[in-house]
Length: 129
Image (cartoon, rainbow, N blue to C red; front, side):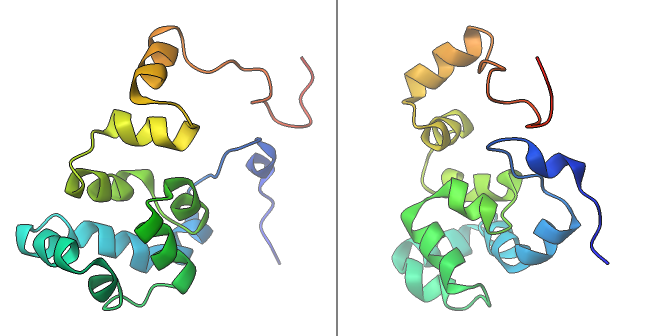
């Protein structure tokens, strides 16, 4: 019997729950491996070769190679683990977040300083208001 998940109807939001955790286990473990300098060097020297050492899905590997963080999240990635990829690439968390919203780093910074994203379109789909 499937669990009732009332949070699934938040537009544009993936909740990292137990199901997502299981789906992204190897992806997130790969990300954690990047905490070690020798693993970062191996990854940068041959990204696909390093990824092939991990029992991730092909879709997860392709998302990492494309640095498609939104796709990584949909495939079970946790943003706090995925941040290790950004750090390996020399990117700040702010740069990564900007890339996930389709904004430049400067546009993202301005949005956040201006109070964040509008609530319009970001409520539960069944919510009125």
